[in-house]
Length: 314
Ligand code: UT7
Image (cartoon, rainbow, N blue to C red; front, side, top):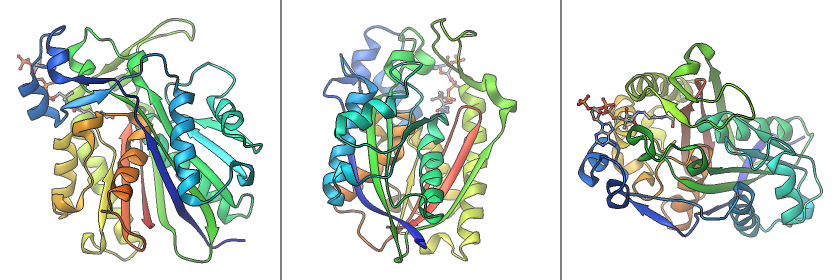
């Protein structure tokens, strides 16, 4: 049985179509200036005819390549997504076949905290010895559930995918993880359909979500660090869910982490829900900011609410 689950490869993929703030301001009553100052977002990617699985396949193959792992060696695939391609079968099974794997594969739904929930689940499989090599992917095509006429949400979201390969190891890897859910806030952030066959769009009480995100994520970050007998000084990088630069900087300030130790990609990606953390992680790994042996804090919150954090030695 392995003591730790280590991240041995990362990958990501963004669809090529760019939608800028100026593009949005041509169809809805908004402006580049408002979006930049209130959210930090400058542009986002949007699929044309790609599916959630298509994005996941490229991100997964990039992560497998970095890890030096063949898809046939995988023991498990977990795909975190809020925008599966079909009600069933699970998009993870489409991904499994597309990359040439033959292991069990399932989808996991915890909205913007999906990657944290999936990584935590994968870690448990590895620590119990039930799996040794696990592919965890966050992939989203949120543009399919955005009301493009609603300026309070249309400006926020983007499409993309990120992936990691985890391996059982005696070397330190994931150090701590913690998950929370509170279903009292269902209507604060949800897709509006009442029935599964009805079309619905994202609805959000932005202000309420904002305040809860800052308070829950700050206390969770403190709780996570103290569970590992660390302070924010021990952190090399915070890799947060990319929802709003004001949420990210408020949390960083509360836990006394300077912004030059925070990976921020939302200016180019927008909020890609379950894909946002692995997308940010892969970006910073590939541009050389994140190095092996560094201590990283992942954290995110989304609909439900569900929220969680993971402290990892990379
Ligand atoms: O990933 C899951 C978690 N999601 C989040 O973390 C999102 C959390 N919430 C937020 O990021 C922010 O609340 C928003 C970016 C959604 C909104 O920012 P805000 O600073 O909370 O703005 P607000 O909702 O308080 O609206 C301020 C004003 C309003 O006008 P009045 O009532 O003051 O006249 C809005 O109608 O801004 C107006 N407004 C806009 N104006 C231009 C709202 N959206 C827009 C827009 N362009 N796109």
